[in-house]
Each structure stands twice: as C-alpha cells, then as structure tokens.
Length: 250
Image 1 (cartoon, rainbow, N blue to C red):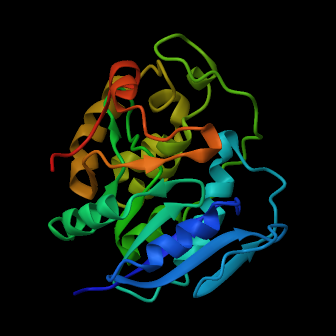
Image 2 (cartoon, one colour):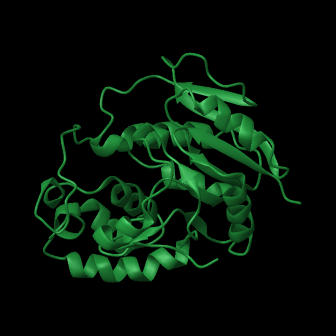
C-alpha cells in the first residue's frame, strides 16, 4: 500500500484536533502536517506543525492566506503523492478511502472536490490531491497584490467578480500559466479573459475546457461536515443548480 502525507491547512479550530486524530487512523496515512498561523494556539499534535506569520493582505477570498499556508505545508511533504485538505472540514474516513482509491486510478492528475462549469479554470478549492510535485506547484505562485474587499458572489448578476478574478480561478490560472503559454497570457490579462463577463471570456472557457481535464480531475461526491458554517453535509443539489458544479463518477 502506497502511503501519503496529509497537509491540514488553515487556522486551528477546536475541531481541527479531532480531524487530525481521525485521519491518523487511516492505514495509508504516512505523516500529518498542520500548516497554520503563528497566532494559532493549541496546535493539534501532528507529525509536523508549520506556522506562518499573518499576512498584511490575505487577498480577495483569502486567496493569499490559502496560497501561503498550503505551500508552506506542502514543502514538508516526504511522499510521492499527497493530499492538501482544510482545517475547517471533517471528511468521513469512508470518503477519505474513496478519494485515495480514486486518485490512484488517475495518478497523473490533481484531484479536486469539483468543477464549476460556468467559470474558466475554476475547481472547488477544498481539496488538492495528487502527485506532490504538482500539488506543490499549484501553490508555488505569486500572491495577488489586490487588497481584500467585500465581494458579490452572485452569478450571473454583475457583481465584484466582473472586476476581479475568483480565488480558485486566480490560483489555477497562475499554475496553468507555467504549463501553457496561452494560459499565461490569460493569467497576465485577467480583465480581458478571466473576470466575469470579460470581453474574451469565450476564449478562456474554451482553453479551460481543454486544459482542466488534462491536469485535474473532479472527485465524486463525498461526505463531509463544515462546522464553521453549521453544515453537517455539503449542499450538492444547490451548488449544481446555482453554480453549475459537477463531480466525478464513483
């Protein structure tokens, strides 16, 4: 059995301790790395704890915070394959085993929690699971200089994302810019290609439909709790209807 390191990324919550304890019971887990912040207290007992200094600019949708804590944790991984998970979500062991098996049927892909069909280069960013070198490369990208502002998440109404990229699109387009020169042009010119209703949106969508399946694969639906938002399960039906999210087949 091939073992994986897990990176649990994000602020420490009271239930982050139980997440680490639960995942430690999985027989294929090698090491658990907690990547959090210097002001987090009572860090769970893990094989490795990495603390980052708070940022002056967390970025829109906390993208910069996500990038920093993910990359710092992934740099500590020692296995060929790894999983980057979140500190605020409790995934059942049954679903963890499902994702383990699913990912090894697609060893050349980064598996993610889902794809959003309406938006270019837009996975759901809850999980990044796959070859360590590639998962680390996803977060080995520049921070977004745009200051954090309140965003309008609605679609298809015109809101703030008509001026700024969505966090997932920013991260993935920066990663794919290292793979494809066309993606780099789009990442360097987001207002022309990547923001909602961009003038060359169709070109970005077409390239996304070409590149996303080449480098990423969506997991099937899984069971997880999101205590921070008082959710005992993910609203798959609503996210499919309102945001066009879709998933892989078991």
